[in-house]
Image (tube, rainbow, N blue to C red; front, side, top):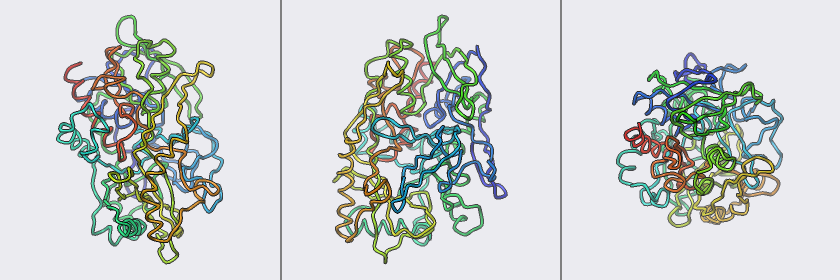
Amino acid sequence: MASASLGGRAVAAPRAADAAISNGSRVSALVIGSGYGGSVAALRLAQAGIDVHVIEMGMAWDTPGADGKIFANTTSPDERSYWLRTRTKQPLSHFLGFPIDRAIPRYTGILDAEEFGGITVYQGRGVGGGSLVNGGMAVTPKRENFRAILPSVDPNEMYDVYYPRANAELGVRTIDPAWFETAECYHYARVGRKQAQRSGFPFVFVPDVYDWDYMKQEQAGTVPRSALGGELLFGNNYGKKSLQKTYLPQIAATGRVTISPLHRVTSVTPASGGGYTVVIEQLTTTGAVSSAKSVTADTVFFAAGSVGTSKLLVKLKATGALPNLNNEIGKGWGDNGNVMCGRANHIWEPTGCLQSSIPTAGIDNWAAGGAFAEVAPLPTGIETWASFYLAITRNPNRAQFTWNPSTRQVDLNWQTAWKRAGIEMAKSIFDRINAKEGTIYRTDLFGIYKIWGDHLTYHPLGGAVLNKATDNYGRIAEYPGLYVIDGALIPGNTSVNPFVTITALAERNIEEIVANDF
């Protein structure tokens, strides 16, 4: 789980006690998932005097591996890297035209590459959810964009109260601009800035949840390298302030929260004596079911992430467990407009062999072209002469989760062709930069002669949209005591990286729920 620097090795930070929930238990509040929404809910419920049990499908991530570190390195994936796969599925699947995926042992690793018909959705698996594997870019949307993100929410309360609260709790900071100008590890970002500005684009520093003091020590060589060692995609052992270092220690301090890792909720139904019967499978590290349990919860908070929450609710409605869920369940899902690309720079404009895995800046063309592009690293350890980007675009396409009775699985009707809108928006930035610089797109990163990473998203949003599938605070009106409190509430796009908005919205909603429902 959490890691900090102590004597040069990764150690676990304090958090709520792990305990396999017992068959037949009764709990006051059961939270499904330990990511941003689930952690906010667990903390605020516990602070209000309510006992909470958190069910987490992934591992605790509190035990170092054979290399003495909890998390695997991005460039050396092993069994810790992927959720129940026998082969890696790298977001950047090729380099110099050659495939880079490799065989790995099947294990309940940290990154789930969940494949649907038209898209692969990357999600964190473990206590801390998506905070374990994201780049930590903690961006509050511009206020003028907020109405398009959450039209039923008062922007005044979000920008005056809940965004500031979320940023404070998450430990959000911006890189020291003076250090940025000289740091070897951000030469690639300075190249990105120069090229963006030469084409007339605004270049902005982006807040993050990395410990910048630690990174300065990494650069100086006085502590073990973390971001400068390429750690990110499969966890970060030292410097990143994931939920393991923010909300989860606070949760532990309440003494009212217990967490069951490697447990998966399969059913929620009304219980005859009140509350809800929740059926849970306990998993082994190879994904096998070691036991099935049935518990009763007075209240249930769905916080399994946009995909997990949406899939579970769609299944419960279709199979008759919660038949009265309204018809908005499963709708309004989007990819936050994610597309990726690389550009080949001239040989006289290198991007550097040492690149921090933590992005710090972006190119803002949202108002004019519908795109915001992170200047992302390619931390290969060698000079690539490449600039790499993850773009967030105003892609209007929305998909729906539906139950497939023949396979007894939940499907998503996303079509890869729908990415075309986002690609065109991203091109509003990169076509212009290429024309100005006399450069070309890289075609060797996502396949053979393939420019765009249009097959994935890191930012799944929607599927149980606020004020449609739920009331305006995440209550499931048809079933009192059931709540949605994660990214499933947000209809498909936040214009920036979404986790600060997910956290702030959860803070808003749980404050209302604690005040009026308990």
